[in-house]
Length: 589
Image (cartoon, rainbow, N blue to C red):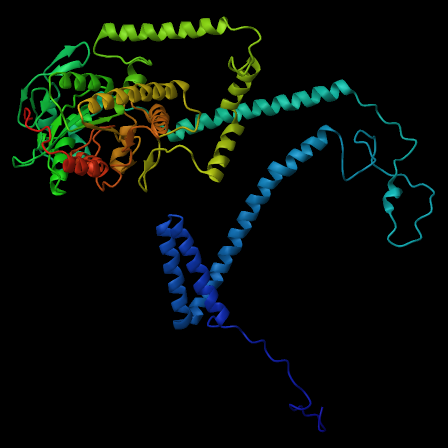
């Protein structure tokens, strides 16, 4: 202090205020640009485009505020920090809770069973007292001495001898209670899941096809559906039935084939035959807007001349289509290309009519009875073969043992199974595609309970028959110097549903609880086969295209035909270039 009691810069220096980093510093700019943009880029690469764009926008806005309104940017960063703090706190609680539940709780339970307390070594848990009586002993004279010797077991205290039988009974009882609780948790989960993720089936007598959103703007829909409610036909032992000729305003059949759009001109064209059920025939569609008609129109726009024949028949499965194909070839007609569009009816027959590995004509009662008898005979043969096996057969070759069956039954019902499946799906992702719903639509489609084995078996039977039919159809086509293609059709259980299409997964006999597992299994089994899966072909629709679980409006037919043509275009062009005459010129349809 200077004389006179004054303070000056030479005698007193106040502590300078710490320099405050402004958001415009180099490090701040790097943090505001690089980090959020890297996160946004990562989200885009992961397929979360919308989330990535939102991160980009938020980062850009914050960066602009850093230069234009630093105080506003500081406030935003403050609230971001608060938000991050509470998010981190919540995540910490969840993670620590999981660690406590899945790590410390089991360890504590095991230590309780073996009656060991790591915090009280040398002391029995059944001791009358955990008090350590003072004994006349010399305290350690050295600092940092090993004090464990100070807590030696107290002598002179009578301990109660443990009872091994009681301990074993306690362990067994606790395990039994845990297993029962696990089973109870699984049952409760299934009941809650069924109540919150399922809806009652809609009775068919309350369903009005013409009033469905897919027919909005189609004033002719009611009259068209009335035309198609009854189609003239004659039962056939092999084909199910034959279509008679039909002449109506929107639905016309000539020589067993529905009239279709044909490209103008008399030049060289490839003759393409189409086989399928009602979706290919065109239920809910006018003659010139069915899948074959739209295929011809799409090919015309691409400069590929084709002539199409629509041999689709409502309610028919692929095996009956194979029979019709063989009969048509037997009459001397020859196509250049034959296309099969199937899957739904084949699966419906297995799920709703008859579960069998034998191709069956459901329109022939005697054939259905024969198939049922064949199925029962096969089951009897399997049982007899099982009984005839030597006693030395290993358990792995003779099926699950009694104990394994009990374990399997427990695992199917256990709540821990649901937890395991959920964790596995989060870590590894779902291995089976599920019905997808548009944003804002509550998913009622599936229960997380294990699929009914009968539904899975239905899919296996349907696919096995379809593969046999495809193999034979391809051989017949090759014998006629024709190419063949096989498509597995989309339906309400494969499409990304729009809100107005959601109810179609709850129609009577077509409940998602049965169909989703069966459809998923069928698509899995068809991978690597001759079939092209068109399950997602209708996902690009911006308005409803389904008017029930499988039938579409004319826009749905156009989308399906476009996907089919895109798959076949190169083959059609190659054949067109190497085929000098084609097989066109037959009866027109």
